[in-house]
Length: 94
Image (tube, rainbow, N blue to C red; front, side, top):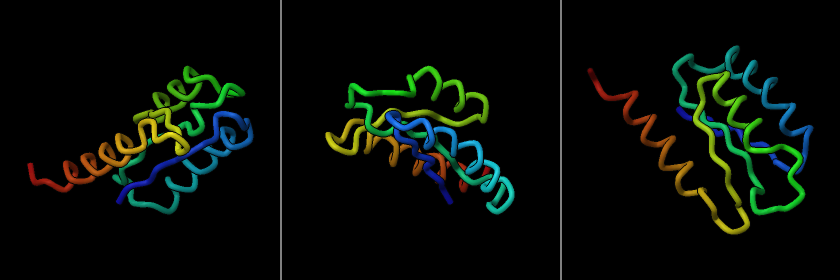
């Protein structure tokens, strides 16, 4: 299982929602579910959430952080590749 938490870096409210979503995941998902935090719309000049804030939130929760643009494809493949690798590595026997 994997969860990609995405916020719009041009919209403060979507960033604020991440903490609530993490609480919901903690309550309802498997404890070892793979998670990544993604800031979308990194191609936009109207950023409200700077990357440092996203990185800090990700670090606080032990998540990997990516900035993406669905519009131009920046880091989209990297997000999916990383979460897939994490899921596969968690399933491999030690």
